[in-house]
Length: 248
Length: 303
Image (cartoon, rainbow over all chains, first blue to last red; front, side, top):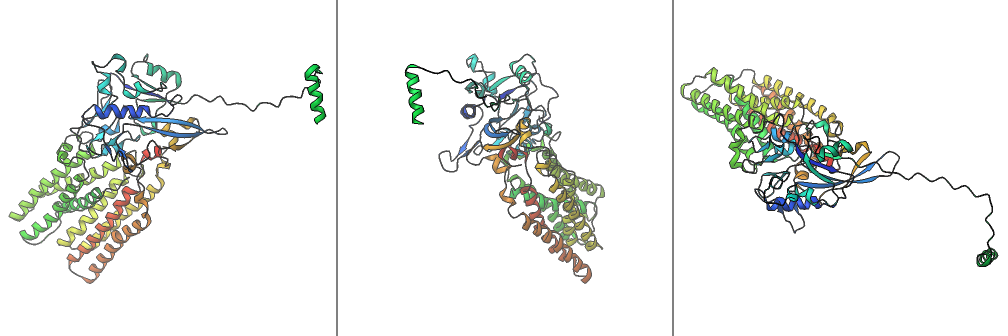
């Protein structure tokens, strides 16, 4: 059903901290590993060991250079995956009902058995969150690890998305944005979480925490010359001083 | 955007086909017996069907195409599928009755005409609805698709039919369609991704710090996104293709129509105008895709 639910019970999603992300790509690799071995079909690659390698990934890490006015440029690593938008345009354009948004937790999913691989959902997404699987010919996207978060067999601490579980710098956080006391809601409130391309009207659930302001070193004032003459040294230092004086 | 040959053929061919169905349904005069009616109906219906079949070639799973008829409540692509099939069924019935009894049911005809107009409109809305492609996101897109469908449909119908003023009306419709396209091009020139209010700064949310520039792509090779939406190779010959589109799509058909009107040559020669226009429209449709800039390009270093 491609009609979007007016509200969802929970709004599960991610907070991505651009301040602490180190750009190691571990989240993307972990995502690829989990989603190629679990789920409906593998996350395929073509020519994986050749010269023209290409494949479907659900998470991609871009690196941007940001140049503030009158200050040096800084590097920001930028992980990008599905934002599980409230007004997901990818869902409403789907002709078959393969794409849907779950009313219980707001996760946007693709039913691979219904997908005809027309690609219109990928055209409708401004974020490039959906990729066609080159072997299965169906659309693939982030599932928010729906097969981990509700698992009853995984260890308690593993019941979070693979990318969040693996991030070595705690730049990724998972939680319910409908709960004002959740870790993700708190982080967004404290750090001023932002939407990507709000002008597209997609109302993304995932939020990004901007890098904290840099403490920039001020040019140190030139030290004033000490007007009082240095006390005269004696002993060995006095001899050294005199010897150096003689050398000029 | 990547110009998929199957989609280019589909939109041009089925556009002409549904344009022809629209006109025949409204009662475009065609003299002659069942054989002539069969030929005319086959041309209109055949083009529409051939285009629809071509469009399934770009699907990852064509065998599941029937599922596309289910989500008409929200999806323009689904609506297009339903409108196309309904129109073809109605027109098939209309043509069958026409062929066997010689009478043209105006109720069936008008309904089929309405369906044909709806089909072309829904096709255009698949593109016009996309906020991610600012050049397509305009009411001018349906105007252009409808204009070209009507223009090329008229030329085809005129070649087989017996309209007294086929050439004059043909010239008017072709000129109108290209005027709409000219407006579309003017708007598209001003409605580029850079003018849309989206930028690498809004795409990353980093605009509050400063100017944003891509330093490193996430991947060394190409991927689905870069091939499909950050596709730029097709723009290489944009200028030549636009000239070609105008020459073959507008100028040549207009000259042929004028010559036929002045010389009184048989209407069948209008077929040459229709063919030329179709080739011109293939170039126009190529550019429609190739020149369109998608918002995801902002993540790949293009403004």
